[in-house]
Length: 151
Image (cartoon, rainbow, N blue to C red):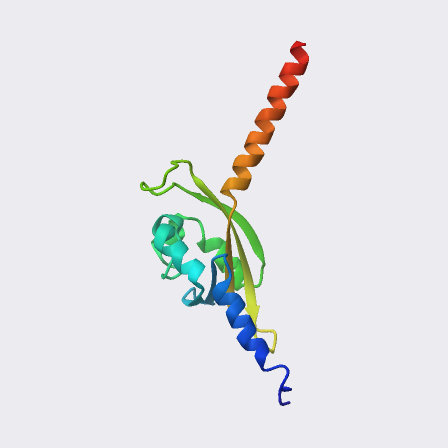
């Protein structure tokens, strides 16, 4: 079946979305080798890759990935599971804040037209600010409750 002329631009649009997405996105083959990544993923790997266990190295067998706890989730995603899990890293020495950085990572299998798994897609979301805001909210609620009790 030949693609309709209207369908042809879809690939270019999807490539642009992948390339320009603000979230770090990478595509790995089933053996853990990095095949494609967007600019955000490259920047993430340059800034935090070794300590975060995410970079231009094998996701299944590299010691950095193993130390960061990514190997087991990656193996499960390669076996067909979609996973969302948290991981944290220490802030780099040059960062203005020395608080740990917190992330969520979504791993999902990628399938071909025959519904056979061909790779794993990784998306990383920085949730540090959200977690700090939730912590501050909880702390302030506790202070408010304490103040109300003492009145």
